[in-house]
Length: 395
Ligand SMILES: Cc1ncc(COP(=O)(O)O)c(C=O)c1O
Image (cartoon, rainbow, N blue to C red; front, top):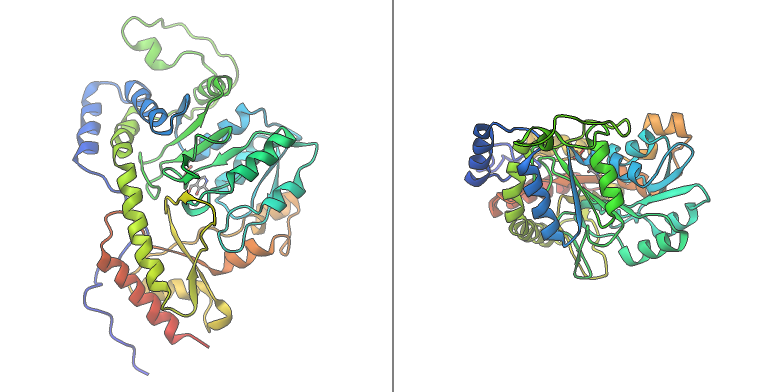
């Protein structure tokens, strides 16, 4: 059989994601470069202020990445050696690594097979006397069941620290993610809903935790370089505890300030494109998008994930990704289950078979291109490629 020719319009590679940056961001970065102050200073403060205003929350601590934010949030909540922290196996390395880096044991729970959000019964079943925090992930930008999670956390008196790396702009029952739990951590990696190049933000209404994170993000030193060196500050400083270098630069915050102004528009555009995908998938055999939760929410559509129905296909997921690439379509895998990774098996004794939903999803998930500047034609190109590959490989 001769291969069907590719449509003439898809000559250029369509990436999985692309940041949306305008003149405003460029001008602010240039102004920062000219200002003489590049690292943590007035722009970081402005970005934190903008974030607090958006979420209606008291404290926002800007950091060098979402990963750094998770580490600091757990440390601020007092997680340390001998503690246990419950999280989902269906997440990025950073979620579980942060727990280990605090000296604690990562206790995985399975995910829901359709939404890939953490399984509530799994959380409840894994709580012990040693549990020091619960870390759910709002997978792909879809809100976890916050009422139930907060109820479990309150009943057991452990903090709920949300990995909200995918969930800036997400709402749960009309309230913004970040304004509900004890702490939430956002990421501004270029694939995320807004970017600062690299960067993250931890939000909380607990002043004490915020103060601790501010200390820990800069070597445990009580005054920032900006406070010391901007006109009139004292050059003296003292080290309160051994901290990290997890600060955000003003160059990064300069981008973030303007990205915040565009956030709601980005989410709307992502939702419109995701709507086109969902409609198109109704006509397709062999793959289906993740399920939507039944409670009211605003989905931030950080990524558009589908699960291949491998039982109906003659190829596996990795071959499917190769065929997409041959058709100039980028893709991703969010995520290979954490409990199947060599480190988590060798060090913490997790085994294949422990979390069947996460394992099943790991083999079937594909993230398709989704970013605000994508055109409707781009979505059609992706769907042409997906439809053609699946049709050719149905059993
Ligand atoms: C669920 C999740 N948590 C944490 C992170 C870490 O964020 P960052 O890349 O900003 O360190 C990511 C990044 O992709 C993520 O997907």
